[in-house]
Length: 124
Picture 1: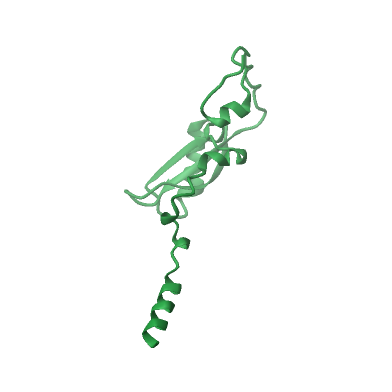
Picture 2: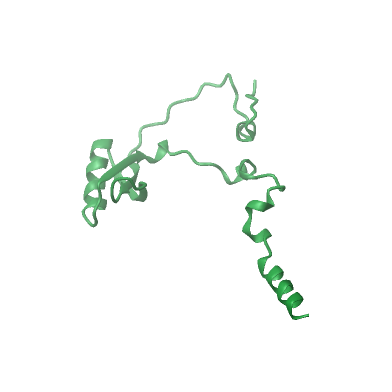
């Protein structure tokens, strides 16, 4: 039986509810970790790069050596790349908004046209 959902991404995936998933085979190389750093307290963490390491402890050490020695840094995050979830480009429909919200788009305001019309009325 295929899983049905309100989320269009789940429906497009056509996931079989009764299928058993096999675990991935062991990698013959180091895992990839995404590195984020915080320049000073209260600011957002920013993605600065990746490191390859056999475990998260060494990934943290490699990240510290690679990304915090060059500049001031108060905090590091290290996340397995496999744990980062992204949307597919096919899922663009989940970001669409209703077309009636033109007031939120600055391009819908024609200020220069109104100013020009006002000047023409003043000169007439």
